[in-house]
Length: 627
Image (cartoon, rainbow, N blue to C red; front, side):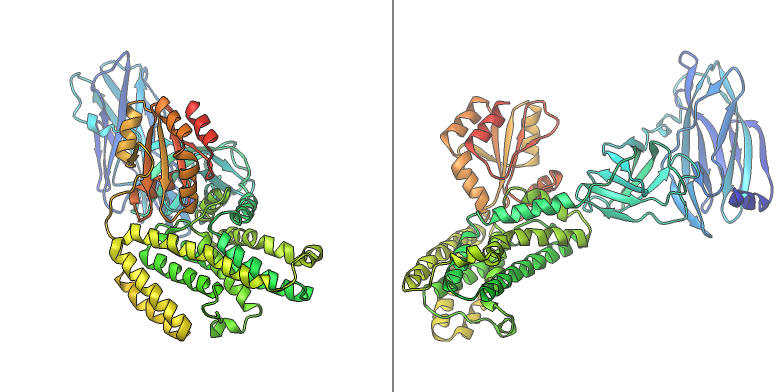
């Protein structure tokens, strides 16, 4: 109020105009216009049209810290509804935060009790460096026929929000369903005056379920808090949403940390991690009979390697997200260079187990206690990324929507879950005491454990063939031969294989549809099938995703599932994400998933898809199709 009085003291003059259908001043031109030029049952839609000169503005329905909105009255027997306002602009000037409208502004309203004409009086405050209150009487004759201004009555630019919102006691406005990839900036404009410190910031952050704005409340908020949320995306486009936020509590990050911990623990049962667990089991077998402190040290070294590698991967994903890139679990396997590098590392580990050479830690790592266990932990995360365990998808998708510190906490929980079995064995004396004693049997076990590592190399070679064709596979095998010879004769020379990496490129290849009756996924094809009211099962997969391949073999390709698809006339769409595909990336993001596999079932007439678990069974798929 004090700010408003201060502004009024600065008013140079009061502008007033006699009755007409238009008002003109050096600051603005204002007209009373009609949508239809004729009343229907005594009712007609009218509007005040403002054409403001550059640098001048009027005020929104809640003006903020200063000013007042346009006001309108009609001469009896006509009555008018409240004015409908478009989205406001935020103006901060001299420590005063105001909600304003500038440029071309149309303020529609409905008049009732109308005959052949309308007589109305309007007043408003127009401001730049100074403020001028203006007032005009408008007379508009409704002569029938088409209205030249009908096109100005466009659909409302403020739409009802489809995203649920709540207001926490500390002033945090939480909106579900909007992530960092969709929103670059946001501001909330309350309908009621005196609710916020209008000149203060509204810090934006993101949670696992949506966005939050910290509103500077000046006192108890209305229940529910209503207003307009203006969202600007990364292209600069703005969308205004009308929201109503009842009291509530902002969801905690704790459930996602627990999901990540459980997902990391289950990840130990996935086939990706089996070769590494085999290596670690062998290393522990060598410690049979060793001092308990030494066993604990080795376990901690392994856990440190897992956490270091997991947090490094998290930092890379978050950096890609901050740069506006696509950040998903396992995304690095879309690069032929990374696949080749991972294959050679796995091959080196396999040849080491086979006894071809002795693996020594690099100079920097050599000074770390339990360095071999540390390296094994680093390698565990490298080979774990093609697999996804239950709970992981939700947790990682949440992490990629959260600020940096909570996101790193989720990835740390995932790494802790991955390392937990080894830590449990090492830190429970009764379990550590049961470790077998070293003996001649260990040499045979070491040689046997080389087999899963070599099998992993063969699988990665197949992935690279899918990505780069015969040329890429030839380069991989040439590098493998160079690596094997160098590791046997002169280990430092193994780095020569890296010179082949720049020659690896993704080759365009036809999508491999191994499932019977499958069609390639496209958004257009999905829309056409749904428009025809046909059930659709979508399988988003990748050649490097071991979980995907197992689900396809053990569930989707089984005769029972194939019969169920045919019986329900369900289309099977397969999206191959082996290489980068923006359409598949968009579908993953739309369903809040951080990578493949993703299984969606669109029932006829359903508004959206049913998301299936990441680990399938034939019975689960058949039951889903039968609903």
